[in-house]
Image (cartoon, rainbow, N blue to C red; front, side):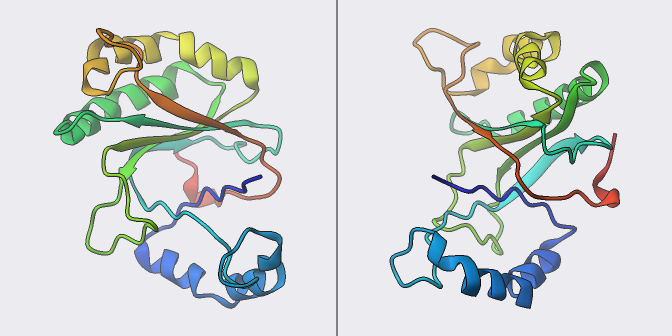
Length: 191
């Protein structure tokens, strides 16, 4: 019963311009009553997570509505944020090069800058993957593929694990999203 908006902006000013725009005001005024709210129909309940993108890519053609879209969150161990950020760049490049059925793949951490707009405040230990694939099988192939498995073998110890003694089973929450609207601008394509 949730709607997820996965958004990317050129910069913080572009984000502020959208969220104070007449388009946004009209949407909330006209559709706010469709959402859970505690303060009236024009104030929907929401969680807003500002993210700092570490790396990622969007392929031309990623905007198909049939894409298998997933958001996954891993928990970094305390003090490992910078090591995780460094380890992710070569990993994302391997996904881009070796997995042509991966349409979009971005990895981000919580925005902890003074201008952060997260509501409630960000969980600074979260690593967020936003991704989409040509289909469900491509997603499962990614999970068993060499880039992902090699990343876990080499860097899994940077993450909280789902079971004691493991370094290759990070604790994660995963949401499969059904895309029903949206767009990518030409400038967003990087692969």
